[in-house]
Length: 84
Image (cartoon, rainbow, N blue to C red; front, side, top):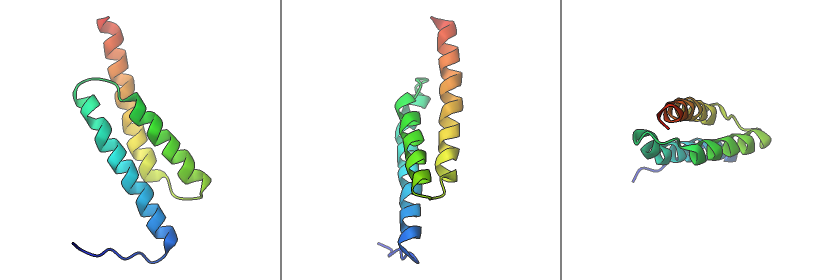
């Protein structure tokens, strides 16, 4: 296994926020593939972005994932409303 070295604690925590956002996003992807809104994923990413912001970390990567889920969830919800 390769060793990853960070310059400082801040860069480590930033990388951790980004990695958690990626993992959460991948976990919710199964819902989207099944055409089911991934609302819990969206909420989790929203909370993660709030925490990153409150701690003065860059939350742009989290926001990119969040934006994808907001749009996808809205599209799926709109489609499902027309089906019911």
